Image (cartoon, rainbow, N blue to C red; front, top):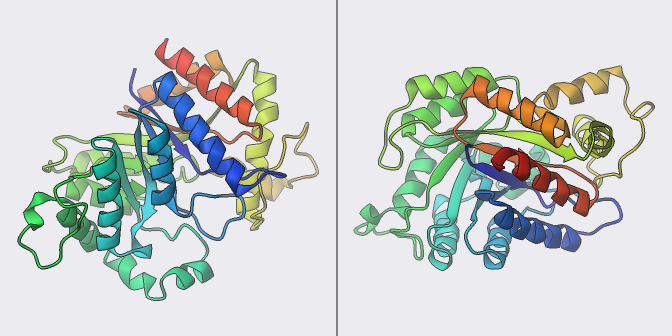
Length: 328
């Protein structure tokens, strides 16, 4: 079985708080480590009431401190929001404290709306255009080859933190292939260019010092439960959450409902279902069957899983059921 990994956003639930969400993420990481998951990544988002992972590197330190061996990383850091030197120092510090456990996934999207993106960095679009150069600059800061430079990252230099490229389009596939980096695709919410991006990445891949051959990790949504009916019920929290993405409602995650009728219309239902095309919902055995078919079709080297469930214990149970059927 290929490695199973987790993407977590520290989602705030209705009636909950950011503190609770962060505590639950830490708890999930500990459980995931015991269940044999390979990585635990967190994503950078801003100005979102339902997501508490804006200070991603800070949270990753919190997660790493609570665990012993599971890899922790960003899925991802939105590099145009930051100076490459600062990110090298932040992740170099993490890698110094927790050696051989830190991943650095990089994306170029803002992780927020355009107004907030401008508040983060007014000249952000210039850095979007310079994204390939900034990735190379960041790699240089983390390498031992930068020791004679006048600008160096301490801690960071020589840590060689593995860099990943994240993407939701074919542009990122070309760049990951050109730079010889492992590639994670956001198929859990942006499935449209998934198959073309996968093909481009593999066909154009050039070996690098970090990676000899392509390594592709798609992210999918999984909600596993004791029965198909229970999983479908639990999934309505995820459907409401992504409906909020479609309509611009950023409120915390809502409890599950018996029916989505009256909550969405045909237009918004279609938009949500299109975003969630790669979602596997059902009993553990049915989820396993669907995932195995997905892996056979894509030849993925690793699978990253995101699970949006309102009740924390039910979310833990979903990850437990998935680990049991996929690794048992």
